[in-house]
Amino acid sequence: MNTILVQDPARPVEAVRLRAVGDGGPILRVNNLEVTYYTDSGRAKALDDVSFTLNSGEKLGMVGESGSGKSTLALAMMRMIKAPGRIEGGSVVVGGGDLMTLDAESMRKARLSRIAYIPQGAMNSLNPVTRIGAQMVDAVKSHLPREGRAAIEARCKRALQSVDLDPGVYRMYAHELSGGMKQRVCIAIGILLDPHVIIADEPTSALDVVTQRQVMETIDNVQKAINAAVILIGHDMGLMAQFVDKVAVMYAGRLVEVSTVREMFTDPKHPYSQALISSLPSLGNKGVFQGIPGLAPSLLRLPSGCAFHPRCASAMPHCTTIRPEPQVLPGGRRVTCHLYDGEA
Ligand SMILES: Nc1ncnc2c1ncn2[C@@H]1O[C@H](COP(=O)(O)OP(=O)(O)OP(=O)(O)O)[C@@H](O)[C@H]1O
Image 1 (cartoon, rainbow, N blue to C red):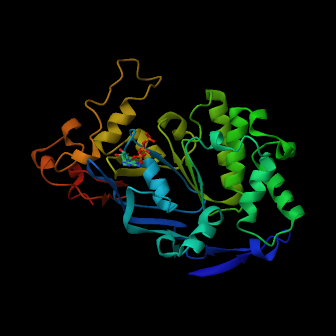
Image 2 (tube, protein in one colour):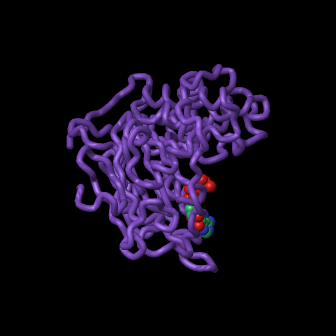
């Protein structure tokens, strides 16, 4: 793989980054990621053999019912899983290097500069007694200790402007901002060091529909500006459909389907994806909405075979005993379902 130096003359040497280019390959490769929570009630495998890739500039929507493992995936990619959870295998390769093999200090540096995470509820975690600017400066300083005060302030104000906030927000406190503005501050913090990959966990929850759209547009704009790969975690398939390129569907810790957004909405392959899509309201669907029968299983007591089989309208006898493996269908879609055995 070739690498080139991407140098911004306005930035000091510390801010210069190596971007992997030339091979046209993915900027992010997640391979066989496994996470288990060791609870008093037993082992919960929250991520089971999760693999996917993303190119620079690509946006992936990660959907699935509550408890399916979406946040665990984000935390595992950031190496922020805490006890009783444990990352038990897999790699997260960003721009050529595997984050899982970095020592603690290198991983600390990689966070924000190579991979940024905007956690669920981030806007409510802004420090109420510290000005927004000071919080942004702290984030930059921990990565670029030799960058001068004026340069850091300019960097922070640029980031605020790139999320359509007035640079004056730098001097404000969180309580002076609306929910949408706070969420945009969190996005600005996420892009301070132009990461290769941005993960936003439910960035629009607790916002009204107009603000949700504005926040999604903001993510879209900043993502285009820095050509990052973006993972958007969320429940709202409809909102997601308007902004992402690919959709990944999680069920009980496994990725059951990864397709382009068009394929997912016009021809979902996995019966769980089909159920998710048919539960969405649409202008054409004036009948009764199809719910998904049953409940998501407890990870402590997963059904045998395919974990979805008790709720699956297309289940076959062997689905109850044989676990399906992910397969890549012609055209590149990934599906984990026995219905497609032999089609890969
Ligand atoms: N701290 C923890 N201790 C024990 N088990 C946990 C812990 N955190 C998560 N889990 C287990 O991992 C599973 C996945 O949780 P996770 O938060 O990743 O799901 P999610 O898809 O992000 O849900 P939501 O949409 O509600 O945020 C849960 O069902 C739970 O069994």
